[in-house]
Length: 366
Ligand SMILES: NC(=O)c1ccc[n+]([C@@H]2O[C@H](COP(=O)([O-])OP(=O)(O)OC[C@H]3O[C@@H](n4cnc5c(N)ncnc54)[C@H](O)[C@@H]3O)[C@@H](O)[C@H]2O)c1
Ligand SMILES: [Zn+2]
Image (cartoon, rainbow, N blue to C red; front, side, top):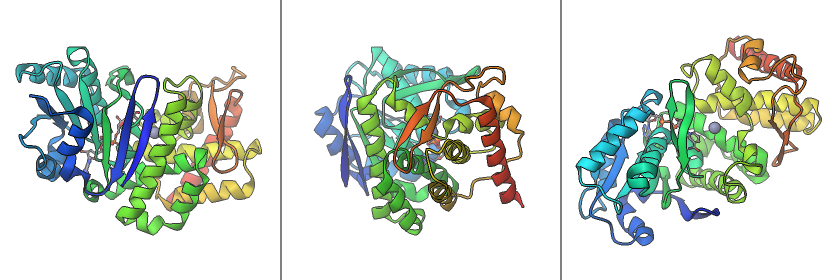
């Protein structure tokens, strides 16, 4: 079991990573929240509840009120939030109520946002059940929903009282989801934690076979990295930006494929490969380092094949050929375990990086 402290100007709380937490949540929550209030709500999806509902409920003297959110990005909407808010009001929720988000990043973002605005804000706890949500979305206080006009356009900063990341719960996660989530840990290592890179290289088998100790190690290190960055820059005015490594072209791939072909982590995997190319060309990493980091990405693949046009991806980053500035900010690794933000990456460089990446993707197709 490992505990990582989030300590920002607006909130201080612990993230606990370990095996079997799901069966002892009630006493753990009482330790941080005091006696459980009259109304405890759990927001989850039917699939997750079917797998983990019983274990979740086992430690509560009185079963929490279960509220369902259907799985899928298309339900990460204001309409879902309003439905949850109304169910909570109808069930007698009040300012003292507690909400628990039990699920992946979608449940966490929607549940967290619902907690942020119900009665102008109630307390909530995150129990992330996907790898991605354990290492990334449950930590940092960002909550919100999508609009038809774009992803995550509405939301608020609302930190949980605590986060409980249970490696046992990952036992039922589809392999593809696990591998995609692991890309955020690869990212964490590359930008900030050389020893995590090494561990992931040396223990890939154990991690991919979900050996609890190995998972806990990777999850805790990834959370520690994110917490450390968020502690220094809660509102993303500077340092927090480095968390976007691999995300400029990653988001472009997701946008161009309308979020339908790749999982987020897979798009980030390809985006990191493109960013490594830019970094190598700018000599912030050596050839050997570039090869080593790309090998690590493929080790946790396979990344799905891509058949796209480079120019379309560059356009989707918002970079303009005529604009010498290219993209406004681009995260580049410096060696292994450090990163910086470049403000002068040009559209031409992005084009070359996208072509390189698509070449790699074509090799995978062959
Ligand atoms: N708030 C943040 O800082 C932040 C950061 C990164 C991503 N996000 C958001 O997170 C979302 C993606 O989250 P995600 O990758 O967790 O996807 P997700 O929430 O859609 O979950 C993926 C799938 O796995 C299923 N699932 C979840 N846990 C399971 C388990 N233990 N066993 C079996 N199946 C399980 C879900 O039902 C779903 O079908 C996106 O909406 C993204 O915008 C937010
Ligand atoms: Zn991401």
